[in-house]
Image 1 (cartoon, rainbow, N blue to C red):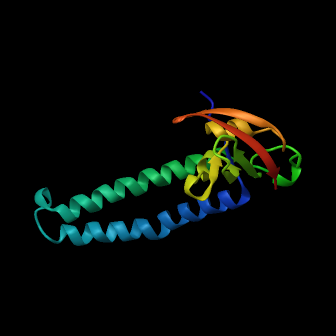
Image 2 (image 1 turned 180 degrees about the vertical axis):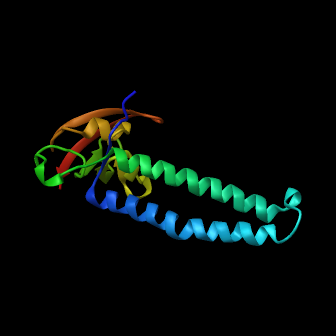
Length: 157
């Protein structure tokens, strides 16, 4: 099965590359040092420090593999080449919940950059998918885990 491309912004690509570099050059050494010190405590069969360090090593190596795969599949979205009148990855969208009257500003990003706490929503999320290709003035209905929401698109930047 072909690998699915990972859409990222230039900023998102840089963050992934920086994290990978940090894990390979700093974190790997730190974990190896923890394992070495824990081995010096003696019997590793009942050594919680050793067990913790080995678990962290497995996590770090797994994350490195995951990042390398994402970077192989990464496709940088050229935000400047997108139609400014329609919502696309990289757009900052102001929407209003029609029932609640609450306005929110979302940035549409690729799934690797999603950060709902900071209003960065994935293009693969229900709201992100529903917004893509739309224009200011349009209203949409989106099925989300808590039910349906009705949103009006106010602006794109």
